[in-house]
Length: 306
Image 1: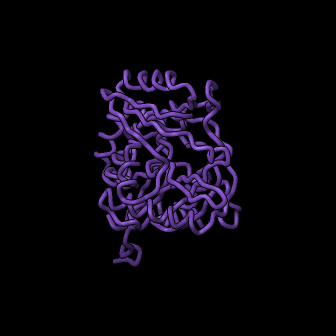
Image 2: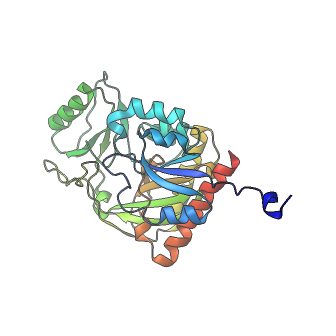
Image 3: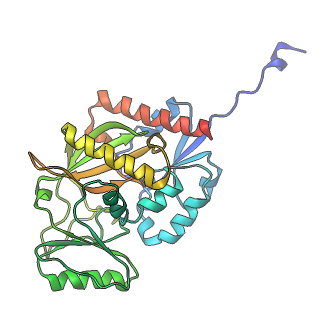
């Protein structure tokens, strides 16, 4: 037998898809460089829309820009349940896709922006003062609005309920004027942070949507939050993992959005583990590459465990 015939075939690298949607087939640009990082980690990676049948042939699927799911929630959750290896998991997606998860985190002791959740057939109570009314299932701040007139707030809630949607009502927090602090976690560990400028326009005004129509245009900048912010982020991540029945390290990516400035204690505004923007572009190149490498290696480890 020749030496050449003794050679074993070189195995193909595991395949992973970054799942997007038809309107943004390769995301919004923030994940630029991630395909290269995944390739360097020994994976064969590409972008596909989550509803593309070719995605079924991948060894793993990482949700990155599936931003049309709020309008197709039932279809999306059924699809997520059927994916062989979905990162983050289908259980996390189901729990985190409805902002009613805020009440679970509050029950676990995480300080949150006061939140009330109402089903489509429930009577909505509008508190005094300026409020925010938004659908419980939404992305990119679509459907969220500020109100000073309680009748207008109630009308907006009623319109959402008439469309069969659950509704969140929150008092407007003036700290929003200073922006949100977004903490990014990779594989359950602190990674980096950035600031999101105010998203919601003044009452009676409309925000500017991206050309895809899927999210309001954001103003982002780097951030170096204090330890008290990270401690709250850690608590939110731990509580989310416990709510879903996983360990923190199983959560490949998460973004914890907080309000609070100066001496005021931070409060949780949102916990995002479905398809959040991770603010890679807010990192200097010297830090962006290593952070993406950690993301890619954690993805490769998830595929290896499978």
